[in-house]
Length: 605
Image (cartoon, rainbow, N blue to C red; front, side, top):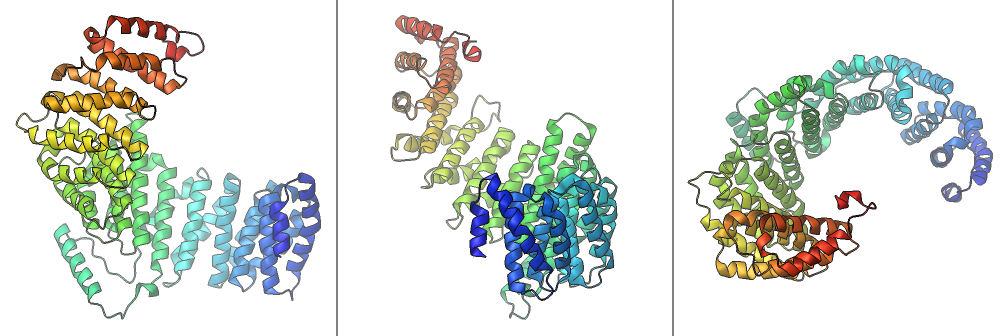
């Protein structure tokens, strides 16, 4: 068997593949048909056949009938491993079957699904129906009206402990929704209701969701205490109902992603259930529940960007009404020990602020303290810190400065500490947060007039300067430090002391002369030039050499560098024309003239 698998995997030419299929397929099929064949040998035959179908399915036209006749009976044998391999073979074969043969196979499988009585065989045929749907897509649509009611019936009538039956049925329904969206339309409401019902299915755990938040918090604390003091009488290993809930969550996700026109229905029926199920006790299921809500947010955001349709506006209004409940649920989850759960919490909150800018303005008091705890906790993983910082940056960018002003005293120190982290991705994201923080404390930004921004200027400058001067660090960190310092000079330059400006501006000029960091420095100087006019920063010392460097960049082959240099020179001409020396003007005009040609009209314009 190892030799045959190697031959199947290594053959590349069409002639050899045709010869292999013609010689090998009948022998494998005939062996499967033998009543006294060894189960182990059958298993190897099915593995080889599966590899051959997936690699050379197009060459099997003459062998399809033989294989179909010999493979379908394998679904009724007693060994689960053989049935699973047979499902894979048949599903792969249906992808290359003509429509007539495919219809016959589907009708046979659905007929057998109606006839079988024992749960194992029923589960096998449900899995077979789902696998065919996933393999052939819309071509299964003709058989869908007959398949959906049967699968729904078996899902709802499965025995209490038969979670694998419900899981298989929900997985098949998920495949129907994703692969046959038009044909499944009459059944979407029923599938949605079923997925929501089984998302709450937890027969071993009584959950009273009608209590208020304080009662829910008290109940959770009591449950945690009971778990800590338990004597091991009951173990979650004995409970498989999580399989049903996980399959229901994924089925619900399929409905949400494939039916954006049902957004209003989703917020009416699905959103409250999802918020309630954030308290899921099985971590893998909880992660899937978070992922479903993230899918709902992304579909909502896509609908909102697509235009001002009434449905999108209604969905956004419904989401705003749920923000309070979502935030309360998320803050409870941030008290959990699981790092994966916390990562998903910040992923969800990140999507929330992207869909609803300013949506957390009245909830920052609840969100920021656990975020600060995560960033200051040494046990937090790098991935968790990155997600927390990414959420913080998006929240700062999408909310008014006044919303963050009361919290900056607590947030700033943990962000500065993150800038000093050794892992470059954490440092880079923390520097991007610092760039957003600069806009929050901008005295010209229209924030609260009573806010005292002065105590934040020098610590922020010192934090960024440390990274700007360091040599042995990642390229991404260098670029983020350059951009952040450029933003700092542009926005808060008037609040920086003279020695600070005389220290950082020559350093930025030095980065402009460095081949590795020059593109970031070019963009930083454009930011500085556009912003220092109101702050009164004197660029007389760095402007002439900077202009000459930028002029020389116009002769480089790097198009991104040429484009950025032209933009920065334009900023200089618009905002500081008096600082550009006459000889530099001549150089810039000559170098710019060389770029005016029909080879790159965008750059020429």
